[in-house]
Length: 184
Image (cartoon, rainbow, N blue to C red):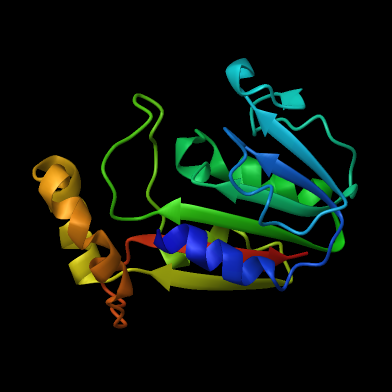
């Protein structure tokens, strides 16, 4: 899993503090993200989040968090700029937002799959932040694999997945995902 590996790597640079996982689902990042307190927010009550809310209107005090995590959520938000602005509002000075988004990826979460972002679009969305590091993940081979694996022969091809994950070459034209770290 390219995204989880990159999140693990980046999280080593994050200082412990109060963290909020927006769109937490089953909270797969809680054990990865350094934190003193880990709050979970999701619009779906079945995940038993600490807060049930949409990402567009966060009921969190201004500048009250050290870290915000948004993995594979922004593409499901009808107003992503508003979500990023809310994130900026609730982070303290020096706080970070760790965000991942798909680029070449099948429709999912229908009918609420609204956007695919390029690194230029992400830079624009996070323009209020002091620094933005964007990590491009995947290449042409990973994109082809994604289409073939999910669509047709996944029972046979799953045995090759560890090998495919290890094939890395830089390909600016065909990223599969982006992971970014924005610092306020």
